[in-house]
Image (cartoon, rainbow, N blue to C red; front, side):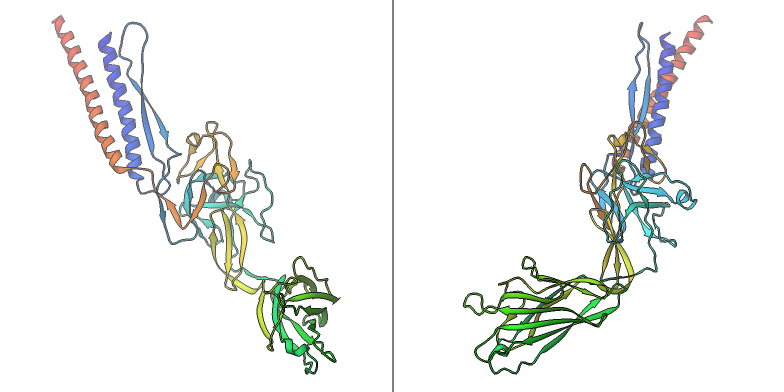
Length: 428
């Protein structure tokens, strides 16, 4: 009968509004939870075919995973958030330390700090995952549709590192007066420091000897390079300088007497010291910023090198592309990991877990690992956290509406009860 259907409709109204109040309560309680994605309750009417009877209402609950909270800045370089689409790959610390296979989870933000074992761990015990870099700092090609290449980021807190020198710039102004007839012919020396493969300081002694002619001016110098580590001459070159009005003082030619051949395209030579090859740049032919011969003064113009001595690790940094760098007190920076961003076709189909993390499901589709800032994914933001997507004012308004709707449904049940009571009284 219609009274019974009215009663059932009122009961369903109480149940669905109770469900909505639960989601509102959850949202408000997590309004300060970083990375929290609000939950919404949707109502759907039920229609029973045939003679009209009250069908009532049912509800479905959906978490708006695609909603983005406001990003706020922090003072920790490994506080991470995502500006745009994508999630950070993480794993439960319990799964990792147990030694078994861990399940990749996804989160939109995290405050990661090094723990006693060197893992980048969040306060909720989630470990940040990444691809490890090779010794030269490059990231190998790894599968993008599988998490098999990912591993928890772990850093040796007592790590020391050095970086050998592989390239130098040698730009010196040589005195033109020393290549004139009657000049003293005295050689000029200078030490070029470099770091060997073990981070120790070594040196190359560069000796510049002018060619003094019997008459006129030769504009010619011999450069001998002596390696302290191997105690041997590793290069010998004859430099001739231009004396024209337009290019006067610049290199006119370089003749290789010993060592690696001069490459006019790069303006450099490659010499082999005790630890391996080093590229030394003299400058290109006619280049005014390379080796020059002007005036009467011997003066270094540009002496530069790469490499660094042994240093202790100071801190970690993450850039917008997800590369994790180790910074050392010697001034060098090493790439040690890359953190990809995880994306799925339907983010709202992800299965929610504790600690604002998610895992793929049949509704979300399969995941893919992107370099941050490529494809559909946004950039990684260090020194930042993502706030909760809960709007407290909106939730409080919804709470008032839910309370009124619940009271109205209770009133329907009370009214139906009174009408049934009147029906019973008819018999009397």
